[in-house]
Image (cartoon, rainbow, N blue to C red; front, side, top):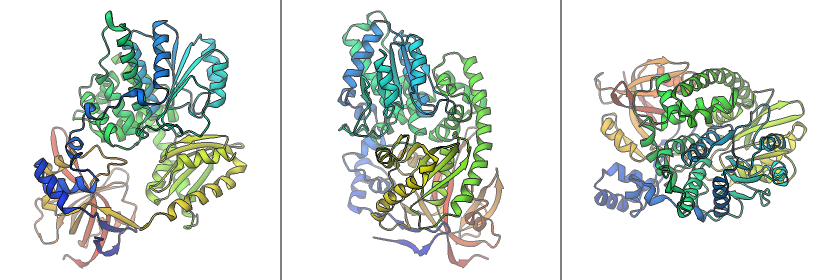
Length: 595
């Protein structure tokens, strides 16, 4: 069935179609699980089978946790680390400066502390040192007497630095999740579910998830060696709050093990046992239950801000400290850096959008660049442009003869593999990433060749996609059917993100009863169905960053035109109250008016 909404293009230029469903399976799920018809329908749309449904609604680590030793080099890495722990050697955790790097390094720092082992965390400065290990940083760590370096969320493409470190007597273990080429650096062990020769199904893990599996493996080996006769064995479940933060913020697929990590991690997070989380709650007055929204849009950006425009080590320090006063001081710094990041980002975004709008609509992706655009915000700008223009994007900061890019891909494009191939072709100085997000450094003079290479590759990928202008929703609803009970049922299908889309609905024949603009350019409104002339029991709805768009113009017209609205249902929790609201993504004009 291809049931579109009156076969009309939407305000945003899409043709919305309802997902096909197996009605027999919907009925089977409804009866087996004793759930509502709409929840059963949403499970079928997500591709959840009869056998998987119960576990999907209540995912547990017991069900989804794999044997960590199935990963290549995990046994080798664990043996080396355990030997270093027992020999009391100096261990340094070398992390990336983003949230995944901060959480991965903080998790291992906390884990080793629970083992009674003091470790050092090293996070390179984004501007002064760049991404990942370098000969300079490893030289410094060698001079400090380092015996073992564990890289997290980086290292897979750090050939020169790792070769230097190994040749100078440092043991090096890589814990990563970025795509690799067919040649690996000469580390003592590389645990990475996305390395070219790995057969694991867990390629969707963030680095913090891989680091957690490493902690499980180390604990099991130390247990066998009677390490915990005189020391309490770590309760690894208590580290899942950190795993949840990194998993959500790195925007990896939220399926099976990752869903279990996040759901169990949120339970730990809301106990507020981590001083860093507690400090955020105090500073930002987060009195209500924390959810994925708070991780992705409140806590995550502030942790990231240190690595983007401030001091790169602050995020890791915040999540690994047990000192509440120190945590609050760090949170205040991060909040200030986040304000600076917003101002810088806004300026770069405006320039990048102006450039993007001048490009040919036939380009398969968008490449924009600017002199000395701040490297700390180009990734965010790339993500915003991708969402606004529905194309894969590379945003490049030019500094002298160097070009540093941050890239974000739409569904259908694979930026990670493209960067690996471009590097193998000799077009890049360095680069890496995964399918949806990647980065590279190149000579500025090579940008035309890089653009041509990526354009050709992405054109072929996009040519395989049918119905490019189509978008899909899950069901029709009425304004009266949306309430807090229904919204809570939908929450059980989360957390939402890549590989677990947030249910999207269409409200047909509604009108905006009243509206207002809040924040910088958000539209808040109250909507009702066309058949109702009552202005009570209206449904609250928000359209974020829409006031200056065509969608915003439609919503704030005073003629009460009847429209179809496309969007999601969320719960607004504020000062102990819970209310349901509709988040508007798109609109379709109808031929009728309400007067």
